[in-house]
Every structure is written in structure tokens, then in C-alpha cells.
Length: 399
Image 1 (cartoon, one colour):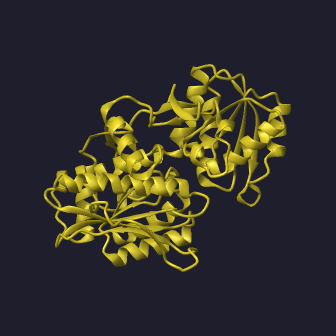
Image 2 (cartoon, helix red, strand yellow):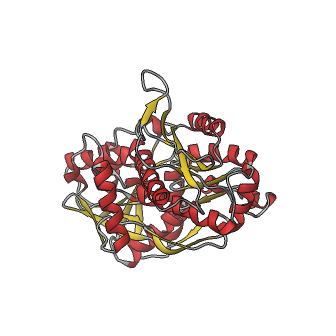
């Protein structure tokens, strides 16, 4: 799957850090806040592991990038407070890419000039693919917490913490089929988006193995992603009792609003892009009641790690963490585990750190918020189990 990974050496990548959370904030590069926002935390140590973070802090996908940045800050603060990684502190510089591939490359150049030794991000798929090309050219270690497109990790310096699009689509079809959630399914997806179309394609391929029928597959594009009345009407006319939505919550919010307005109330099932809809500004969260989604994280889980993480995140940021936050938190601890395994030091070159961390990633296992015993393959894919949650009373509940 990852043929291009074979051309670089199999060692392991770099990890970075960030200091205690005091003094951390977002800064717009331009006075009108239209350029990249930066969250930077410095430490007083002479040598640190430097993580360059990249993701959307402003714009329509900001709910994802903010969660990733916040959780990374939280994990870094915890690690630094406990003595760092082999006594070395983490430092992070997080740049806003506004969910734009060109701006993501600009953000990469900013953190590279800052001295980044490894990359956390980018958060969304198209920007992550663009950054991946640059990090490969520099042989800089990269883990994306949430870039799901296959090509996000096409090179051997890149790994991911989340599930890939094919895995999400196939797992969704399997869950719907094995739990007999529907007889007739409609799919509404963004054909201009690699994340959405990739999930749809793998969903359709897997669906033939189960006892439900895809009765409508209706696409939209980035140019017409606010009015879904035609797609919803076709799903309704086809008598779909479940609508699969492999889309981001930015599009899901108006879609659910319009479905309610036309009196169409099927079951709705989605993937990780739906995570975050409850905190969408201006959206009536009651309209998401009953929506189901696959996710490796449920904030209402009662294990000690989740309870502590949710409490710390709420205290610091005043919000309930979503899956993107959980994946980001685990990503930082994956950096830590790989650094410890490889024995790298911050005085090593970016390329040497990368080679060492690439190898270490194939040997480590972490118990994280999104799974116990998470390991990685040579293709950069994580091994962990998906979970399903349902939105009830304005909160995500494990199914």
C-alpha cells in the first residue's frame, strides 16, 4: 500500500515538545487574523525536542485543529511536569493552516525555520498530504493524529494515529450490517474531498457483504456544500431508513437542519468527521440527537485514563474533548515512546532523528485514550479497535 515508503530507510522519526502550558496562546500572523495563527510554548532548557504542529485553528475546520492543539498542549505539559523525555523537555510551535493545502505548506516552512525536529499534523487530509511531501523531502518524522486519506502517510517518514478512510468506510458498513441498523441506506458525500469520497468508496465496496441495500448515493462538492435539499429528497424518495454521512460537521450541521425542516428523520450514521458537531457555533445540538458515529474515543467512558483526561481538558479549555483531541493526546505519547525506544537526543540532526524514530515506531506499543496496546505497521497504520457512539441528550454515549 505504501510503496513510496520503501525508498527511504526504515528507522524512526522525531518527536517534539512543548513546555508547561503557561504562556500558551494563539497569535494571528496578520492583523486581520486571515493568516496563520500560532500557538507557541517555550521552555528554559538549553536543548529541547521541538514539535511543529500544523492544523486549522481558524475557518470552517477549526473545531478539529483547536482540539488537536489543545490536547497536544495538555499532553506536553504533563510530560514536561513529570521530567520530560529522558530528562529533555518538549516544546511546540503550532501553526494555523486554515484547512488549506498551500497554507499548510507555508505553516510547515514556518515551523521548519523555527527548528522543528518532528511534525504533529496536519490535522485534515489534503493539507496533510501536502505537508507529507515536504517532510519526506527533509526526512523529518511526522505523525498525523487525524489525517485519514491513504496518501497522508504514503512515505516512510509518516505515521498516523487515526484510522484511514478505507478502514472507516469498511468498518462503518460492517457495523451497520452486523447490527442490522438498516435495510435501505442512502449516502451523501463530498465528491471533491479525499476524506469523504475515500470513505464512501470503501463503504460501498464492503456493503455488498451485508444485508442492506444502498438505494441512493448523492454527491455534493465544496462549491455547493450548504444546500442539501436535493440529496435529502432523493434519499427520502428512495425510502432510506438510514443515511450514511462520511462528511465533516461543517456540512453535517446544515444538512441535519434541512432534514429536520423537511420532516425527514431517518437514522444518521457517520465517521470521525462528525465528531465535534455538538460544539459547532450556531448549531442546535438537539438536531444531532440519535446520530451515530464510529470513533475510537468516547468521553463518557469510565476508565481512569479517560476520566482524568476529560477532567483536565474541561478544566483548562472549558469544553468536552472530542476524538480529535484524544488522537492528538495519544500522538504526543507516541512521540515520547518512540524517542525513549530509539534513544535519540535533541542534538541529533532532523534526518538522524527521523531514521531512528521510524524504526522505533515498529517496536513500541502504547496504552492510550483511543486504544490499549496500539502498535504500528511499516505502512504507518495503527492497530486498534473502533468503537461506536450515539449522541444522546447532547453528549456522546458509547453504544
